Amino acid sequence: MAPKTDKQKSKYTVDRGWPGGFEGETLTRRGFMTGVALGAGGVASAMFGLPALGFALGPIFEKTEHRALLDVGSTKDFNGDTYLPAVITTTAGIGQAGKTLIYVRKNTNPTDKQPWPYIAISTRCAHLGCPVRFIEAARSFVCPCHGGTYNYEGEVTGGPPVRPLDRFETFVKSDRVLVGERFSVNSQLERVPTRDPGAHVDGFWQVLYPPRPTV
Ligand code: FES
Image (cartoon, rainbow, N blue to C red; front, side):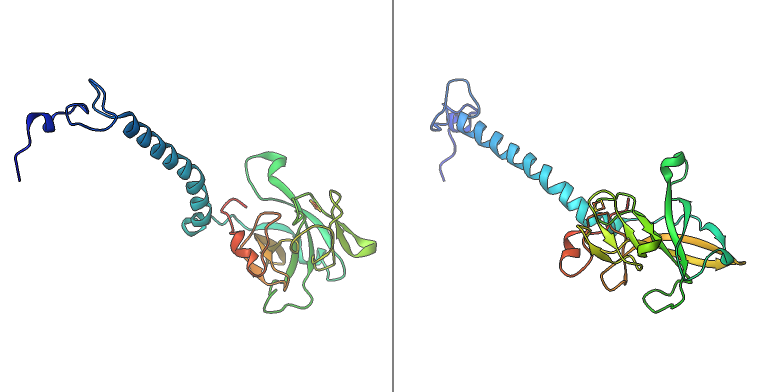
């Protein structure tokens, strides 16, 4: 192979005989624009791709910190016939904003799916998170925002909510009822990882709504 001439070694586009070369330029405009377009495409792809990747993979690296069990009253305070309200602190250090209302009743029929001695139902609506209320006369939970309704077990009976109301773990120690972590339940009332309001937990849909560390 013939050795390169000085012009072929030159950094200038004109010397190298490149199409579109211009006196004094080391890069053609086409090459420059191609580089800019590729760079912008890479940035745009990263803007869309990285958050989605983080959202999907985040739960894998999640380090769950379990908060202390919360005392909601004596075992004598609750029975299996109706729910009683109790206020618990789910996020410490932020005052009233960290407190939430739950409804508690005795679990008169523990099963493999729901082995907890007490049923503690979250008041966070499974549609968009409005606070639901238990209506004793109807033995139902009702959401004031968009008309979501749930039966005595917290299963959806009407309106837009996509899954039953979340629940909390419960324990008994020294005749006190203690409340632990929140969890979501699917349409079979089986425990599943906690989801945000609006997130589906049944069938294929649950793949599209992965749990997040912050729920
Ligand atoms: S937030 Fe409860 S029905 Fe919409």
